[in-house]
Image (tube, rainbow, N blue to C red; front, side, top):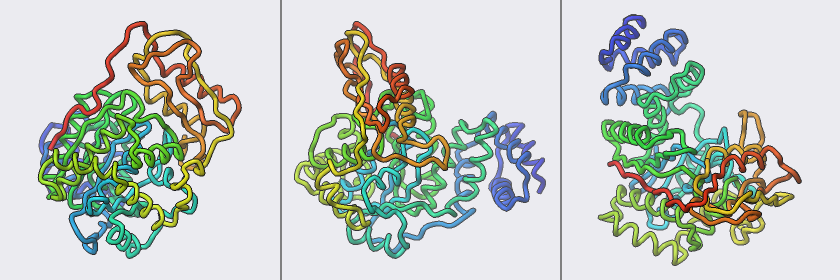
Length: 433
């Protein structure tokens, strides 16, 4: 088989067979197929697309390119969740304990963040002494004992995807639905869960800016899951403004803990319950979404979910005093108000600009070598639909600089204030299963 023939076949809009796809993935991973031929094929895929079978085969080939995690030592039906990423997205810290409080095991492999804020692991490390490195035996024991563990992703999960993504990033082929879906699902499938719930973001702060694109990606990923033997549900949720009121690392952990203690931050609480409900239904703990939602709400109110969170933090070495007293989490030196210039109503918040403002403060990484400052971040005081008076704070910058000008400018750019009140964006657009 010749790579040039595979490229030509896809260029002409024909369907690649299993043998051709495996030939490409294996050859490229081993370095036998050069970058210029791989980039030619990804560009052909970008323009000609892939069928459902092609995308599933590509995903499985990427899974098979490296290690897969054997979670057979974990008791029960393991359900994982994945978010396509957003601003202020701390849902994992709520959903994990919430699902664990029903007895469903959550065994999560996560990564670090490159962008607005830290990733899941970075945020957890805002808690003093929290360990994300553990042996496989410790990981499985923690899940069996506490029904929840979060660990750093092994370096050899789906190496074909890692190599292919780096190539796509520099050849303008990142935003191909089949390639995005295959990339995400290859890592999820290699991580060993029985079922998967996907939180696919849409809007200004999301990778997919339009509902149409987000739905196409969600359907592709659900189809991959089903074709490869995993029950998969996708929730399409709004990211036209940050989720909740906190953007950062320590302050996101604090907000998540407050939700687990019964605080009602409406959008964050509702989305967390939505995702947890689908996870527990897939695990067959509840027979219907409605029953799951009702019972999970009870576990937010009765303290079971918060207790699961505390046990999880303690089991991974975290300083539990920081959870018992959230004010002991890292604190910034300064609180800088960014105020409104006029009276009116908040009609839009560019979530991505808020994320960039947080990164300027030090909450995220511009390059992979940057260090995260866990103490800094942004607290929103006004969200879409809220009335605001000139001089009132729109956000508070939790900053280690007295005058963080770049972040102030970015926040001002993010907010649109109009005379007329607008409706709050729909939070959950669609569920695909």
